[in-house]
Image (tube, rainbow, N blue to C red; front, side):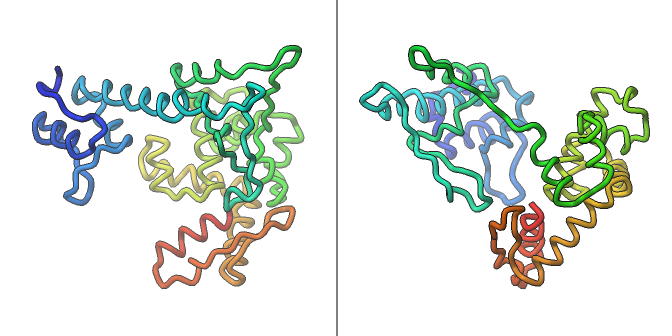
Amino acid sequence: QLAGEEFNLASPKQLGEILFTKLGLKRKTRTSKVSTKAEVLAELEDAHPIIPLIMEHREYSKLVGTYIDTIPTMVGDDGRLHARFIQNGTTTGRFGSADPNLQNIPIRTEAGKEIRKGMIAGKGRVLLSLDYSQIELRIMAILSGDKELIKIFQDGIDVHTGVASRVFNVAEADVTKEMRRRAKIINFGIIYGMGTTALQKNLGSTRAEAEAFHNAYFENFHGVRDFIEKTKAFAGKHYFTETLFGRKRRFPSLRSPMPFLRQMAERMAAN
């Protein structure tokens, strides 16, 4: 009804014609090719009432196709699901899961959470849910030996609050929710190799502000900075990095003549 005609919602070509030709919405990718990817639609969400409906339809289509229609066909003779867990399923050393991928059951949206309600414990049993507490930042503290980061964990302080206190130069008791939110972005952004531009975008701040946060972080946590630089230097010399337990990941792109490929490999090496 909003488009004024019938069209195939699953066809990017037809959807692009409706949105950018018929309805005249202004958003194209850097090339002349029209895109209807999720991030493009998210930018256009307030531009026309048709966009939220398309996004909602996509969510339901994914839930139906990937989970509702598929998972019941994978149930074993005992009425339970038996996924395969794959030890070498990822290049980073994390476990993978297949048939079905139980690590990918939705949780972020209300509709997605409904899928989880279909998975219940057997009679006389319970499902136990466990999660590591700030595991990436704890690993960073161990690998880097950064005194300030270690102190935050040893003092039992919330790590994002502890970082916010140092980056924004305020007492821990005076850290606001917004400061903690920003510190969380800075924490994960910096340890995963986010540069100033990406940090600015994620923080929704100015470039100068993002640069100031970036610098303040490394002034307070120079052990983290040194670890990242040492790791990049090691990878540049040996073309691999090792985890705490000796798992190697190789980076042939570090030999690439193309700077952006080398930079990407450097980020992944510390990662």
